[in-house]
Image (cartoon, rainbow, N blue to C red; front, top):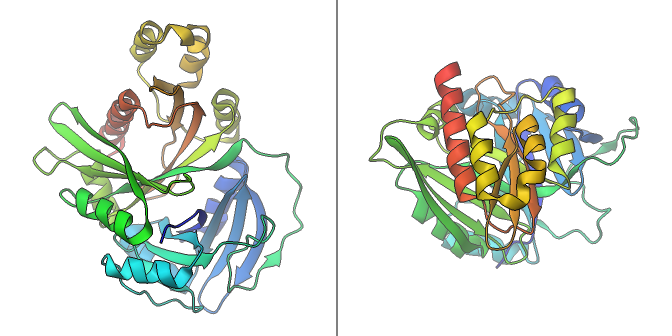
Length: 339
C-alpha cells in the first residue's frame, strides 16, 4: 500500500514551553489545541498544511534522555491502515506499543510511524485517539509556510540502501533522487524516497563509512543513533519569509560571500535578486525544471539534534546538488565552531 500524506510529526521535548514558543513566536505557527494524558501532555501547532505535536512528560523521558529533543513519530495517512501495516511488517518493521491503541510501526532508530486513516475533510485533521481541547488564542495572519516539503533523516553509514528499500517495499514510496557529495576528506550519500503524489518525501542521508568523521557522524553521536536531522518547510516567497523569521529570532546558518559572486555567473537569470539572496544568505540552485531557493536554521535545541529549513520551489522538483554541498560545508563550519 502507498501512504498518502504526513498527518503530523510529534516532537518530544523536555521543555514544551520554550519549544512551543520557538514554533509560534519565531516560525509563525499557531496553537490549535491541547491534550493531557496520563503520562504526557501535548500541544498541537499548525501552519498551512503542517501539523506539529509538541509533547512532554514522563512518557517522553526515555526518548529525550537518549536522543535529546527530536521527532519521535512521523504519522502518515493511509487508505487502508491494516494493509499498510501488514506491508510494513513484511518489509521488516516491528509493531510498536501505543499508549492509546493507535496502529504504530517502527521506522528508523527510535522513530516510529503512526498509521491513521485519511481524514474525511481538511477540517478533520486532529490527531486521533486523544482528547483535544481547542485553544482560543490570538488569530494570526496566515503564515508563509505552506506544507512540509520533506523530512531529512540521518542514518548510520552503510544502511542507506536497506532503508530506501524498506520505505519502497513497506510504504509504497519511489526512489526519486540520489546524490553523493564529497567535501575534502568527508562525504555523504543521499537517497530521496517519496510517494507519487509528493505528500510524503524522505531525504535519507548517511556518512560515507570510508571517510573521516564529519557533521553527520557528529549528529549520530549527539542523537544516540539515527533520527530526523531537519524538517523542511515549503514557503511561498523565501526572501520575506527569511527576513520575518530573522526578526522574530530564528538564527540561520551563514553562507560564504564568495558563493554569491559565483551564483551570479552560474545563473544569469537570478542576477536581479542576487543582492537580496546575499542579504538574506539564501542558497539558490537550478535543475531541469526550475530554481530552488533554500536556507537552514541553526538548531534551537540543547543537544543540537534538530534544525529547520525554509525552501521555495520555482518549478524545481530536485534538491539542489550545489546546495547540498553548500549546506554540508556550512553545517561543517558550524560543527567546528560550536563543537
